[in-house]
Length: 151
Ligand SMILES: [Zn+2]
Ligand SMILES: [Zn+2]
Ligand SMILES: [Zn+2]
Ligand SMILES: [Zn+2]
Image (cartoon, rainbow, N blue to C red):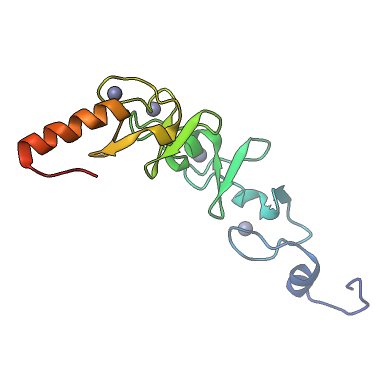
């Protein structure tokens, strides 16, 4: 019996009143263990890291693009990587610049290693950041070598 007075077979009941597993997209029956992860529900056997398949029950996990990951895999595989040192950037101390993520300490002038006062103060050349002064030098060098005027 459903709550609305109608009679349902088990799978219809689960579809109507129960949770649908986010991973296998089938209803979680009352006899099965449901795990709530964020806004979604999972069969307990499907509540696993998308990458390493380890159970995330009672573990910290991060959801991204509809999949769930253990923290280690998330930071190793999914998280943005610093353009310079190629290790994951954490949420707190990174700069989004030139279409990539950078650790604050990695986003320094490629030539003189000076940190910018602000990210906008850096200029891009060949995918690397340069301070205003070094960029001016590079412009001059490139112009002298090739006759091409950089922007
Ligand atoms: Zn499932
Ligand atoms: Zn994992
Ligand atoms: Zn870095
Ligand atoms: Zn510089």
